[in-house]
Length: 218
Ligand code: BG6
Ligand code: MG
View (cartoon, rainbow, N blue to C red):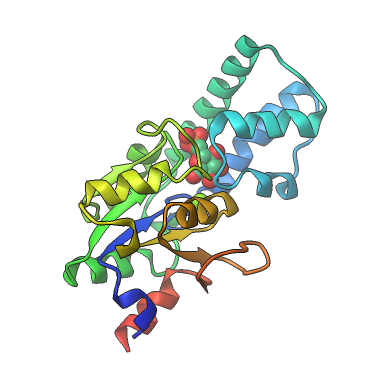
């Protein structure tokens, strides 16, 4: 059992890259947009979009292509990318859950912890439904319910508030730099899902939620 996580009564999960592997779908949709605009967008470039809001992601994509668009053109481009992304999400099912995600959520529920989702995605409700994991969450905060994107701590502070716990009693699971920064700025324990070199500043690191579950079980 990992004693560092045991004491947290509230567990707040990022969605993309922590519970579900959606990065490929985001990538395919951004690459399609880039090609339509006449340039290539690589998987390496896509790394820069992790945890970043949709409009900020578009700005990074345009920067890669050396293009600038008017506000109206940006809105249209983001809407187009999202329509493709949502189309790709139709193929999403429980197989896209990342290792240990469902087992760990089940374990936490049985253990009486409070569970919240803290995601930047406006598509979070659709993804939860397709993965059939909505029932695990006491609160869902997503891109539709926050005004300030990560690294602002708003998404996690709202999550803690909705499960009626002070930030210091909550652990946040995140795979993005912006998310780790948001958790720390919010006064929470930050679990980096990924490598330390890529996610500086977390309080502990795991490769996937399977690590926590294994440790909790023993
Ligand atoms: C985050 C992803 O969870 O959500 C980002 O890591 C994405 O890559 C962001 O841009 C916004 O997602 P959506 O679904 O609202 O476009
Ligand atoms: Mg993420």
